[in-house]
Length: 109
Image (tube, rainbow, N blue to C red):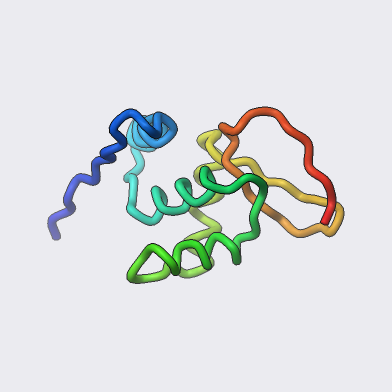
């Protein structure tokens, strides 16, 4: 099986994506289109979102929607690399947000 090398054409508009590409490859990982889609979705949000909302966002932009398990793995890996932060509000629901958006406070639902 031949794998094409995925490159990110950001045009300088999204340096976060270039940093992600270097971090994933630097850790010996493979950057997939799904990982990029998830991270872009989180970058475009103004607050934390649930895994279900991430799945809905993927449905709008991808032909094949990843399984929920894959989305959890991707968000966990992005969290390990420091690109995503897990947020748990007063309702106990786990949400995720891009960690590169600066310091701010969250209110409960």
